[in-house]
Length: 235
Image (cartoon, rainbow, N blue to C red; front, side, top):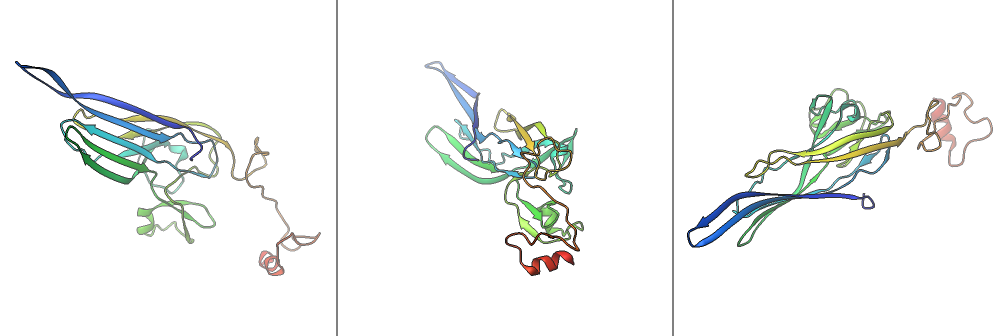
């Protein structure tokens, strides 16, 4: 998603103040900043990447290494077999920590972190999605080989078209226990597979044409098809 817009922001709060009879009041701050990509418009069934950069800066040098983020989407956008937690019809995808580094200067402690979507596994033939935990537990619904889906968020192939409100939310962070929420919108504008009632047929990705297996190509086999391919089809 290198060609899409970015979303960023900063929050700054006072941690404490210090004053003595001989010195003016001095404030100590903690600062939270973030930067991530806006989700691009998508056809159903395809995946999106995210690299959410988050920085926590504390002037009294108190670290917070347990920062976490969730990607929140309408339940209808969670693929059938995924088993993430759902509350009030919103599914929470736990984001993975891609990197986490601490640096300390004379006046600051900074925790730089990078978050990505959770890793997903794609079943061959069906396109069904499974988490790493489900794969390790040998989920009984798995019938075919698995492809590596990477750290991406995939919408269901037959999701309804339109705009969906989504968000990224953190746990309570830092001394002030601030929760960060970043809002975005995911727009599905066409289908992966075109179908009879599709109103976006000119934009849908793949068109399926029914054929007669006994005589699949009466006008000759298509370019690139071998006789063995046709024999396999007839079987």
